Amino acid sequence: MAQGSNCESCMYYEYDEEYECYECGIRMDEDEVMRLLSNSYEKCPHFKFANEYSIVKKQM
Image 1 (tube, one colour):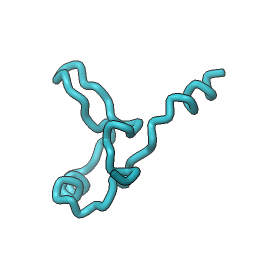
Image 2 (cartoon, one colour):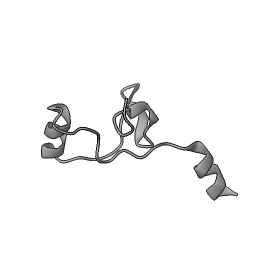
Image 3 (cartoon, one colour):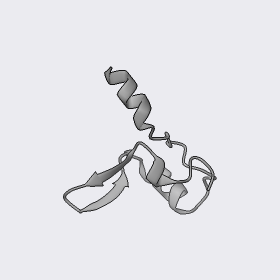
């Protein structure tokens, strides 16, 4: 899978305790959601690789 198409490795992929499932944390408008669901995007334009090591570096 190409980078930008795997939600599980995206930093915006968050756990929602209310619904007890993972979901995208980006707030998209209706048009963006329809493009994403209709597969007109080759990869998600909001994808950012979740790198735990870079987060830790900022905390040091």
